Length: 78
Image (cartoon, rainbow, N blue to C red):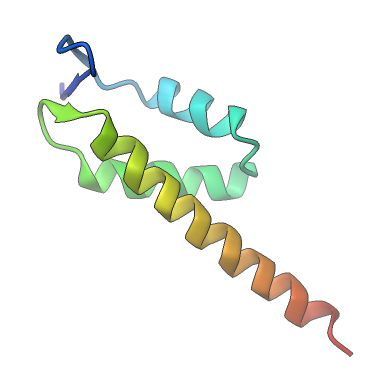
């Protein structure tokens, strides 16, 4: 099991559920949330600092939201 290094210096096991709750609280649609979690899981390594999880998660979320926004705008163009 992989551990996460918290800002306090404490190590705790990586929790996909905690990541999912965080993404959910941010209001990210569920289909995008699944992509974000899959992306983050490819970046994990033992004793990873939390900022190396949250930073890429935010960046990937913004990219996915932008792609979906662009698709929506193209679909309603006349």
